[in-house]
Image (cartoon, rainbow, N blue to C red; front, top):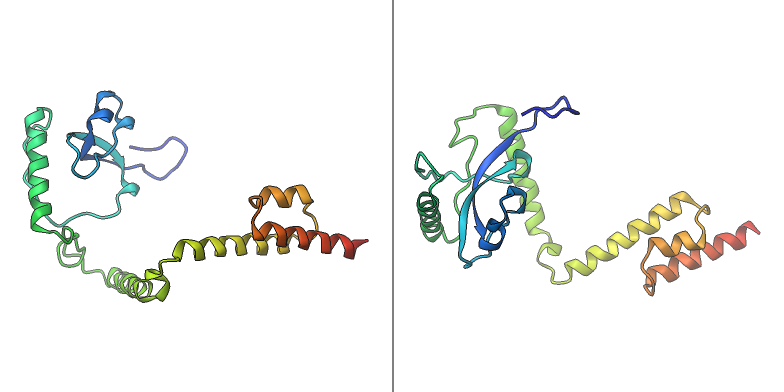
Amino acid sequence: MQSSTDSEPLYVVEVLVHCSKDSVKDAATEAAKPAAPGETGEMQVVPVMLHLLTSISSVRLYIPKDLRPFDNRQLMLKSIQEVQKRFPDGVPLLDPVDDMGIKDPALKKVIQKVEAFEHRMYSHPLHSDPNLEAVYSLCEKKAVVRKLTLKGPFYTSIELLCLVPEHSDITVILCSYWLALQNTLM
């Protein structure tokens, strides 16, 4: 499928998804929502853009030739649930080198780099820090302050207050910064 505005192709994959019963009532596939764990739902074939897929399992299931009948789709749900029972830590992912036989050395280098970055990320002390959300929020506020200092004295006080939520420490800092700049300009 080709997008009319881009020269790049747009790929769509049809995926069998366990959808909640409420979302299945609507005929539009855009309304299909995955069922919560343990919720009874219905299996539906839903078109998904390829770039939204994050991983593919190496487990192969044999699917019926026709997925239109309800019973065939529900049979697939039972097969998927059985696979999940067999792999309680998660289903194995498709490996491009071992499972697909890709021998490109550039791909092997990229895979090694990804593994190294993942190792660094998971071994970093912030990864398991219970205050990660608060630290991340402070880093975002710091980025706003840096952006303001790059723009210089061209912000008005109203712009400063609109950029940062009221009653926060950063608002006080920004307002102080703005007032200091105003005093130096006068």
